[in-house]
Image (cartoon, rainbow, N blue to C red; front, side):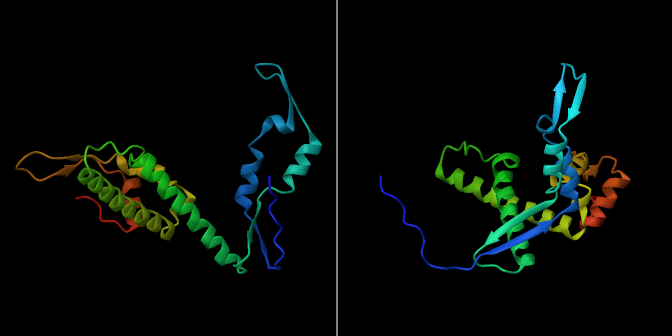
Length: 184
């Protein structure tokens, strides 16, 4: 087995530290067993492990990025979040847009399915950008937004104009905040 030589070249690295107060409170709700001695099933008593709790709480809300190229914290955070958006887009392809298996019988069908998925990703990206601009991620995940708007039903009868089921005030506000035209 050969060993990998250590890199001898000196190169600058940037350690970028961030603090997010929302993540601080989120960290408290996880890993109860690590921080409490649990007695009885169902739970009868939970004794806090003060040392473990104090050690963990001092780091709640902090995270770090390490870069050998980007020294501007804002730019590094933007690029990191963009990477996350791309990963979520692939997840959307697999899960939301049913691309786990191509399930096609010809190359032509595969090309058609890929094209439709590509257009769907464009729409998802557009909705995400609209949610960012309207600051809706404070109150909704993308899935929650779609679930809220998914309840609008369109009724179509041959030879007659389509009409929509009752649209709630909440849905009207979401359409307006996103800059989308409300179905009439």
